[in-house]
Image 1 (tube, helix red, strand yellow):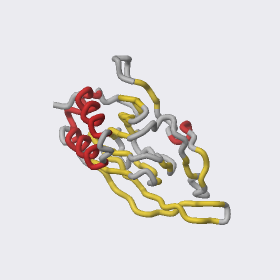
Image 2 (cartoon, one colour):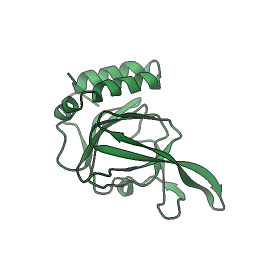
Image 3 (cartoon, helix red, strand yellow):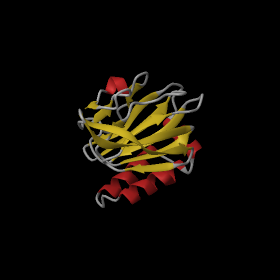
Image 4 (tube, rainbow, N blue to C red):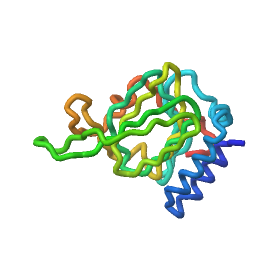
Length: 185
């Protein structure tokens, strides 16, 4: 049975090894019981980002995508593991290429994630996300670093040029909330 406390403990245990594969396995084990995850996290009835755990070496988010929501291309600058516990999250991957104005991005593939699926994104990945469904989609996003404070980039949707990350533009329409204080950081 999924519990947030055990999930965080299991993820924390992978940090000493710095094993992306071990971190992915912890997330895969959790989302293999999607109903238990949804129940434990009390999946919200609206889009938002809930901070489940925050430390310098590990950030865990509960991300709930709005129906038909699309994010701007962005990077994380650290490893990310995404585990779907409800709905779908389609990731479009981008690659950087030289341009007259510095660097732009161009399409480089994608991956559709459904309930129970897990994706491992390396620190250099640039991606955008689409919830193609007409209902909410829920995912656990795990980062092996200080995701909430690291300087990152996003790309203009029209010119595909890089600019500093703007949380308001990327998370448009999503509420960001912290877990009620229970000793977790």
